[in-house]
Length: 183
Image 1: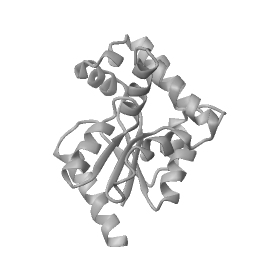
Image 2: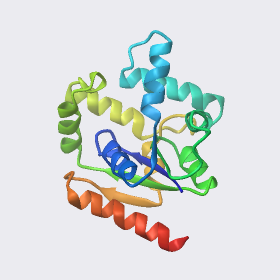
Image 3: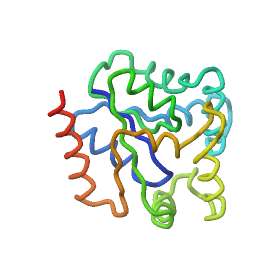
Image 4: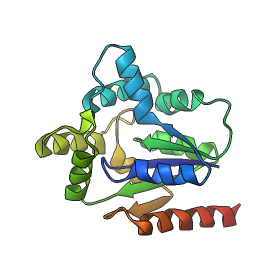
């Protein structure tokens, strides 16, 4: 089974992926791939730099980024969770592989608070900068750029994650149960 995760900045996509990892999934992080690529190029892996690199891949063709990330793990063929998908073609690519996609969202203030607590270098931004970056990631008329709104809109399952708690994990487990029943 392949599961893709999409969602807004700080919504809890990584927490969902880590829960799935505990359930036996192999976790693949698009962010880690992009951060490695930024460092390889001698750049500081800020959110803006990573978005620009992601869009360079997508400019080659709309699924080039997700294909490159999945290509890194060619020995793993099942129980894969890939996080995070940022465009409609990426979501559809996972579906074409037989996978399903989960979207994760939370209120803006909760998400900003979460990224501040994470303390990662890419998250050390003001609220205004956070909002600007989110807006750049949310929509684009170019299908080869970030379009979280579109990706979230075509996801198979939607999780509202206002509070990371056992409730979140129950929602994920319920989705897994639904998927196993449909096989």
